[in-house]
Image (cartoon, rainbow, N blue to C red):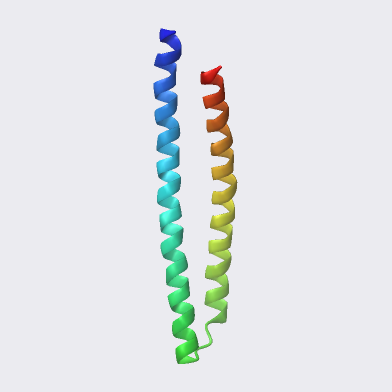
Amino acid sequence: DHKAETDFLPLAEQFQSQFILKDEFITEISLDVKKQQTMLADAVVKKEAVEEKLAKTQQKLRNEIEFLEKDFSASKNQFNKFISSVLE
């Protein structure tokens, strides 16, 4: 019906926006991981002791990835429920 169609579009756009933001966050984390890899490789080559800094950065990345996994899973479940409700 017409009401269902008018309700669908704003919610679909909302989910699209959420997934775009999450994709941007994934890109940021990916860049941070690459920086971490470079820093670690440089430390090995130069034989520098940067363990504390690397450990803090590593923990920060772990926390961000864990949050993103949980948040993305919740959004995916909400989206699947939304699609199921529309298709009924």
